Image (cartoon, rainbow, N blue to C red; front, top):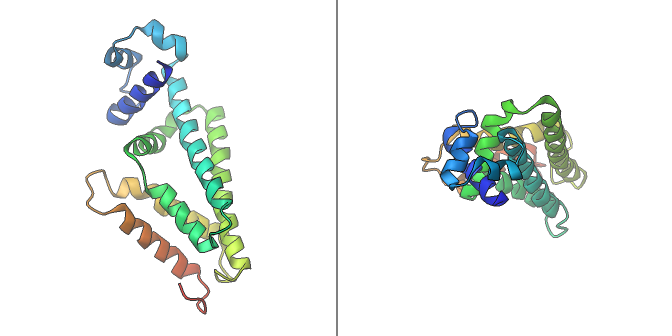
Length: 192
């Protein structure tokens, strides 16, 4: 039941927004009582925070798998990160929509916990860029922090720029972003 409440909350938060979704709407759509809801969750706010935690924890877990894959070059790792941020199942897209749209409702102390994990995610991307510089996959004068900001900015705002009705394929977005990033930071003597 706890999982069902979470899934329904994700669906309603995505469709109606956090503020327009009441506990009453959640339990009504599930056909359960408020008592059932409060047995599993203290508040609607707790659900919002849990959604944020799930989203960033899933991203970090998948990112660590990419980082630990010794068969990938730094360029390939960078492309895999772009794929991770762009390719979304419908469930992941719902989570991402809620995270970016509803983050402003998090309490300061909870937002700090999420920000720490987001900073870890960004630091891992920066490490890929720095490793790429070290092994001559990327230009020596590449500013790793700005390259990281560029990648995250492009990927994180794609959902705003292109709505669900967009006809642009995720594969095309990924390839375009990858080319923009890697051509910009690649050592010109190394073929892309």
